[in-house]
Image (cartoon, rainbow, N blue to C red; front, side):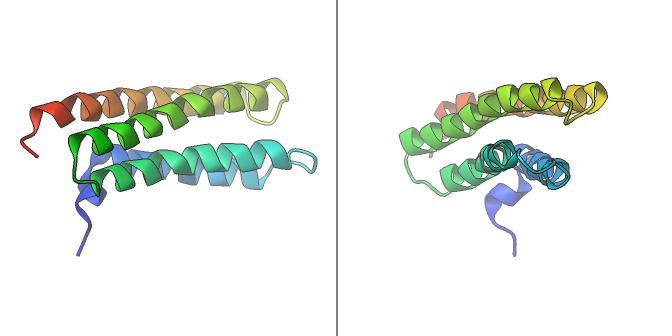
Length: 120
């Protein structure tokens, strides 16, 4: 039996993004542990906060956790930019990951706005 949040497309995309980041960071050279660790944490935080927010009972709590997830999306942007500048990710892959972040951010904004429209 699935949890309700597992049906959300934004959650599924966030998990997919975190999976992509894990694959990317696995191949980073020594000396970039700081970047790999922070990027993995930020990317996983997106899906984790969607899940946690969905489990909250009040609108304010749900909105807060969905907002934290959106903040984690924003956190990934400079981390990916640094990876690009350091030559750790190709410009094409960087563009793909950034585009996915933009879509996830839009979906989270819709989720945040939708919290007020729902009865509970």
